[in-house]
Amino acid sequence: LIDQLEYFLGFIGLASLVAGGLGVGGAVSAYLEGRKPSIATLKALGASGGLIRDIYLIQIGVLTAIGVGIGLVIGAATPLV
Image 1 (tube, rainbow, N blue to C red):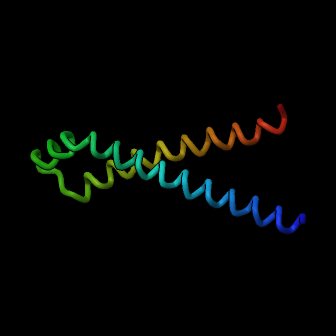
Image 2 (image 1 turned 90 degrees about the horizontal axis):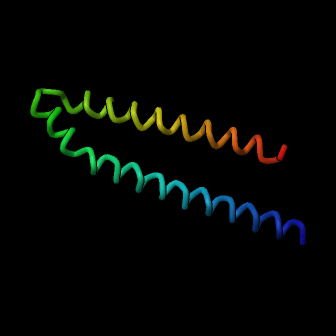
């Protein structure tokens, strides 16, 4: 029974990670969709596609690092509470 419960909880954990990944992917897609006018302006001013990609990749990476940091702090503090 314990082994079956362990497998079940592992499956639930993996399923929640997949659902979270899909949510984050949707959020990033919506963010970039909203930034289309800014991207078009940068292209019109002569910015290369690589530069624009790098700018938004860095922005998304910084926001990701902040989110991971907040999650780690909450996850570490929860057992203490």
